Image (cartoon, rainbow, N blue to C red):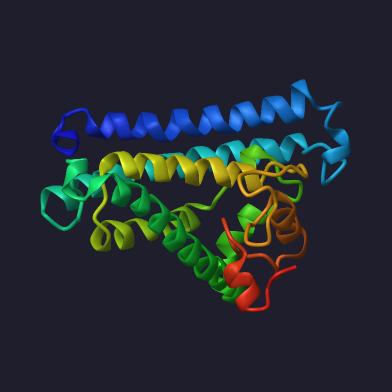
Length: 235
């Protein structure tokens, strides 16, 4: 089976690294190289990211990817010791639940992200780590995973919550983790572009998150603006 295979760890590492490089790389190439002049009127910060910022982002992103990749060890260990609710036959719960489980993971992750993100801003000893991400004053696709190693570990805290609580199929986990990467790149893209809900009232957009990088105390959400609106931190 997938998590008993000798190549599971290598597969997990390759998925994390290649997926991020592909998604962030394509987004950067399109908006910052190929269509740079054509889309400049949509740029939220008219300046281009400084070389030192990009160099720092690539370094911290590489560290984050290393941490995310090694987390596959934990996933395999938890599964093999019966701690998770992972299942392998989609028919066990049906296709409706398969897609529902992806939505459940997204909603749970948004809640976890909002509160862990807000706490990192409010507690000085945690903000010293989170401020690495805020060194990206001019967000771009390579800012998405530019985390201090401690923040990268904190961000992984959602995984045991999901794996221990929700029955999930490995393919649903792959879809979810791909969506996480895709959306994280989107909110850091640095351009006024709509995605998915086309900028509806419930969605956290690239504009919202760009404002967060500039003002810090607003827009802590990842996918949605629910928690920001409830907690009066939406702007």
